Amino acid sequence: MANSGLWIGVLTALTALGASYITARATSRAALTQARTTTMAEALREQRDRRRSTYREMMRCAHAFSEITWQIDDVDAARDRGSKDRILAEMYERIGPAIGNMNKATHEVRLDGPAEVSAAAERVRQMARRVQPLLKALIGAENPERRHEYDAAYLEFRDAYITFIGQARQALEVKDEG
Picture (cartoon, rainbow, N blue to C red):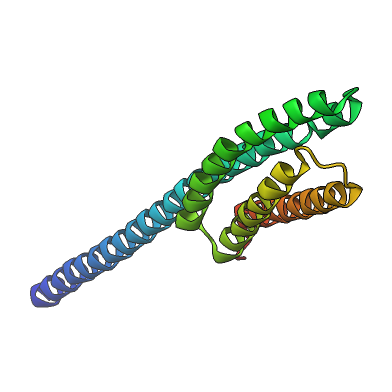
């Protein structure tokens, strides 16, 4: 009888050790899964924050470019050709550095992606570069066709910018994987 008690004690001890081992493994796996999930969530948050900052800089540069081009209203309001040309020359002088800043911002967007947003930023940059020589062509020009070309190029820039904003917003959306 004492022998069966010993076996029951040994069996109970082995069962407790086995249950403890299984519980420890399950706890370890759960902790590892939680750590991986936390690490992935943090990496995604950092990526989204970096992209948001990069996209905002691109938007700031595009807005600064637009502020210069909006001075065309001042040109239209000017009384004489000399005043118009002076304003146009000032605009042209300021537009180069604005495009330079946009170039830099576009390169940053290329780094942070994704590809659709990068392509949209490049389109904004190209459309801004297209406006620049058309602005210069307005200096001293009496031909209304030059102004129509400038206006059309600006509208293409604006459309590209609106597309960029949509692409950037979409890239920043949190996607539900569940």
